[in-house]
Structure formats: structure tokens, C-alpha cells
Length: 96
Image 1 (cartoon, one colour):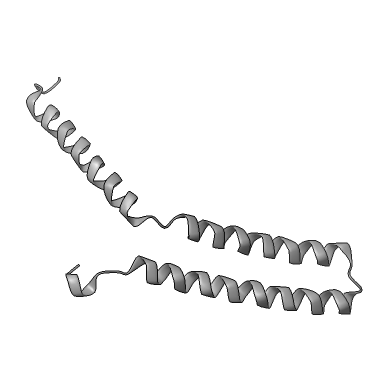
Image 2 (spheres, one colour):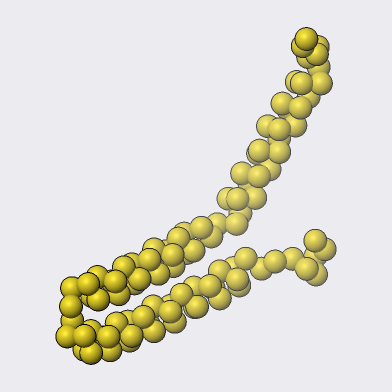
């Protein structure tokens, strides 16, 4: 990927967060309408709260997953470890 095609993870993360926030608002609105129509049965209420819980967990995960610099450092460290392992394999005699 060239420099002009670099993915802006922060921008994408913010878009996803906005989509999830809008989804949560819509689910809340739908839940209130559905509860009023159904008389607020426990089953209906449980289903709406499950959906809201899932969306909340998802938005929380998206917000926490964000430290790109940590990920870059981890990848660089893993590359070093893999390089060392590959060097060790090249130096060791073939088994068999």
C-alpha cells in the first residue's frame, strides 16, 4: 500500500463509533415503541436489552482496540523474534 493509500484507522474507528451510536439510538427508540405496543412483556424487553447490550459491547471494543502505535510496536517485535527464529533454523542442521 502506497503512502497515498494509507488507511486512517482513527478516521475509520470514528465512523464505526458514529454508526454504532446511531444504531443504539434507533434501537432505544424502537424498544420504547415496541414496549408501548406490546404492553412491555418481559420477553420483548429482554430482547431489546440484549440488542442494546451487544451494541454497547461492540462500541466499547472498538474504542478500546485503538492504539495503533502499540500494535505497530508489537508487530515490529514479532518480526524481530521471527527473524531470530529463522536464523536459528538456518544454522541448525537438518533433522532426519
